[in-house]
Amino acid sequence: MSGFHKDGKFCKQVFPIAGSTENQLSKSPILGGQPNRNFPSSIGGGAQVTQFRTFSRKEVRQFCDYDPSRDFDRCLREHQNVEPSVWTREQAEQIRITPDNVTNVINEPFPRISADLWIWDMWPLTTRDGSIAVLPGGWRVLFALSAPRSVLPGQRHDVARIAYWYSRDGLDWIQGGEVFPPGTALGSRQWAGSTMLDNDGTVYFFYTATGRRGETETTFEQRIALASSDVFSDLNGVLFDNFSAHQIILEPDGVLYQTQEQSSGGIIYAFRDPFFFKDPATGCEYLLFEGNVGGTADEIDCGPGVPPEANQFSGNIGIALLQNDNFTEWELLPALLEATCLNQQTERPHIVVRDGLYYLFTDSHEFTFAPGLEPGPGPDGLYGFVADALRGDYIPLNDGGLVITNPPQEPFQAYSWLVLPDFTVLSFIDNFNLQGIPIQQVGTLPAEFQFAHFGGTLAPTIQLAVDGATTQIVNELQFGLMTVSQTESPKCDLECPVIEGGASDGKAFDKLDKIFKVYKNLFDLK
Image 1: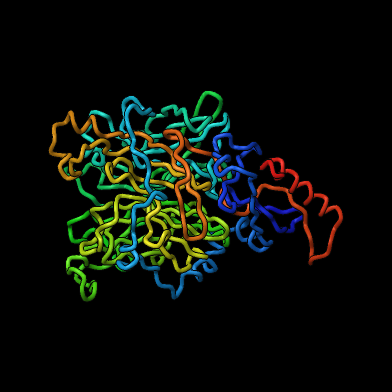
Image 2: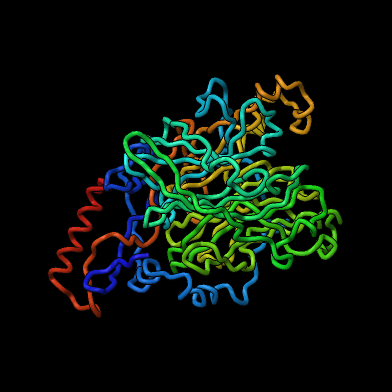
C-alpha cells in the first residue's frame, strides 16, 4: 500500500470520526469530499458535534506502508499467548428485548431490488480500509446471495450464487447479474463473504465455497475461497471481468477450528463468511469468519447445572492473518470470541471501530442457542461485543449482547444484519407475517404460503446510536438504503504537513489549518 507522506516523512493525522457524538449523530464523510445526503444527520436535533481521533506518525506509517510479508512477524506477535474472549451463559441470560433493540413490523407492500431473484446475506464493495467504495460513474455496489424465485425459500441455500447490484443513491438498485462466470466458482454453491477494491483497482472476492463442484449429493463442507477481477465502471454501469482462477485459501485445522468430520451432525457446523478487516491501529490485515471450536463435543465439559447436550454448541468467531501480497496465504490464529456451551452459530462476524473501540458483531438464531438458558434462548438477532483493541477482552453490548432483533409478534421477519462504518445496518426480509405459525412448520406448508410469506429482498435500513457498551436503535430508514461512509482509520491519500520533533513550522501549521477548514466545511461545523 502506498505510503502517505510528504518529502518522505510521515505525519500525524486528525481524522473525523463518522457519527461519533455525544448522544447525537454527525454527518459522515463521503468519497469525493461531498456530504452524504442519505446520512440521517438530523437525528437527535440540535448542533452536530464531530469528534476527531488522532493517529500518530507511527500508526499512519504502519497502516499505509504495511507489507504482509515484511510485517507478518510484527502482526503475529499480537496474537501470541492469547486466549479467546468468552461469551458466557451467564452473560447471555441478561438478553432482553427492549424498545432500544426491537424493530418495527414489516408490512407489504415493500420494494424489491430484483424481479426474478430471492436475495439474502448482502454486503457492500469496500475499499482496503473498509470504507464504502464509490466507483467511477458514482456507483456503490452491493453483493448478495441469490437464487431464482421459482426455488422454495427453504431450499435457496442449496443453489445459492453471488449476484450484484449497483446504485448512485444507495437506494435505487440496478441488477448486474451473477458475479462469477458459470462453472468457475468453487463449491456446489457459494455462501456469504466480503469484497474489497484494492488501491490498484483490483477487486478481491472472499467467499464461502460450500460443498464440491459436481457433487452428486448436497454436502455442507465449507471452505474459504478467493477470486479477483478487474472492474469496469462508467456512467453506463458496473461490470466485473478478467477473473483470476478461484482458489481455496483457508480450511479448518481441527485444532483451533473444527472440521466437518469432527462435528456431531445436528445443527450445521461452520467454517464460512469471510470478512476482510484492516486494523486501523496496526495496518495488519485479517479475515474474520464464523467457525466452531476445534475438536469434538466429547472433549467439552460445560460444568455442573448445564444440560449435557449443551456441549454440542461450540460456535466461535475466527481470525486469520495475511501472509503475502496477493491474499492467497493466511495464518489461522486463536479465535477472537468463543461461545462454547452457549451457541452453535456466530454468523457473518464483522468489526466496526469507533472512538478507538472495536465493535464486533455477529448474527445468530434462536434455535442455535444451547438448552437450559434462563429465561430462555436469545431471539434471532444481531449480537455485539466491544473491546479496546482487536485482541482486547470483548464484553457483550447491552449486558447480554443483543443489539437488534425483530418484534416479538414477527420474530423471523428479518435476518443477516450487517453494520456499516456509520452504524447504519443492512438486513433482508426473511419469513414475515407468519400469523403465529412456528418457523419449524413453515417448510411443511403449501408452496403458495411459503412464497407469499418470504421477503427475499432488502429490509429497512436501521440507524444505531452507540455509546461505549450501549447501543440504541434511533431510526428506521428506507428499504435497502446503503449509505456511503468511511472507516475510522488513517487515510493514505491526504496531504498533511510534517511537524518534526514537536518544533513548529509556520507553513506546516498553515497547511494544517487549511485541512481543518476543509473538514469544517465538510461537516458543517459551527
